[in-house]
Length: 400
Ligand code: ATP
Ligand code: MG
Image (cartoon, rainbow, N blue to C red; front, side, top):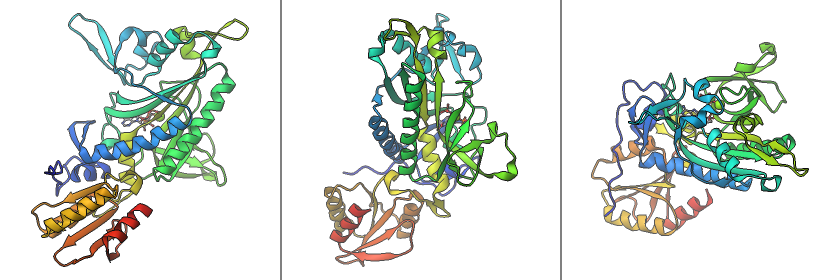
């Protein structure tokens, strides 16, 4: 027996839900709030994040990134080595065990990667290295108000690279920039790369990937014909000469340099035998923020409109009083390699249609007493309803 989709959809958004992504993702059953900034990714939400992560993973692997998984509970001593135990005090969650030993919950992993490198990299022949992981980050965000765009506990993909020279680091930095552009294009975003500051990470400039959206907390400025924009935080030009727009930061890349290696003693033996600090970069994307951003940029008054490449399922199959016949269709669609959400609940047709619009899967199929040998086919982002055979449906879905 197929278990029931968990949980049910909701007619009303929670009272405190100010942002669209919060309202729609909660109502449609993608996420659930435990407390401010802390979310369960429910089965539908986890499917979307898994699809986002797959796209990110493919592009990270394509530039030589090696996936691993690092711990989230970190000893104080490692964060003292760079001084960030104190300088990043505001964002870090710190705790003590019963023996008064102090720890931090990970808000990022530069220090942990640097510790890994110094234990394992001896010579220039061991470099360059590029490693990444997907894991939870904890940050004591003051304003956790924008739904899943700003969590206190959220998912991040963070890539770290180490090099023998500044030139090699900057070459790789450009490669990551290109990979990030591919990722955000594949995700369906309208975005710009923007120059920005380094926050608690570095004194140097960094690059952010900014998706156009009124829900964004950032403002970017750019000139016609220029590829890169500038974040308002570091903007010094004359605003009249530039276009500007609100945007959501979905990714950020940092050419960190040698500071971390110097402070933590990550020295390698170069060709001439001299000891040198590694050149280090870090590169982040927030998959849970990406999911919220997708909802901000693609929805209507009925609900979410997922792009096919990130939709939780390929098709939403509704059975209207003909479960037996629809089950056959369900099995055939699955055998054709499609991900099908099957709504065979004993509720009225209107409720099934409005739930399908709310959940936002790209294609809705209806099998009912009236459809005969055919299947009713409708795309979420269009109005046209067509009657197709099963073979035609499968062909359409494989083309899209
Ligand atoms: P912001 O300026 O929005 O606070 P940040 O610059 O501190 O973000 P980074 O440290 O660059 O964030 O993190 C890399 C990526 O992780 C961001 O581009 C974003 O996609 C995601 N991210 C950062 N903070 C959060 C958060 N609180 N909730 C969800 N995703 C986040
Ligand atoms: Mg950032």
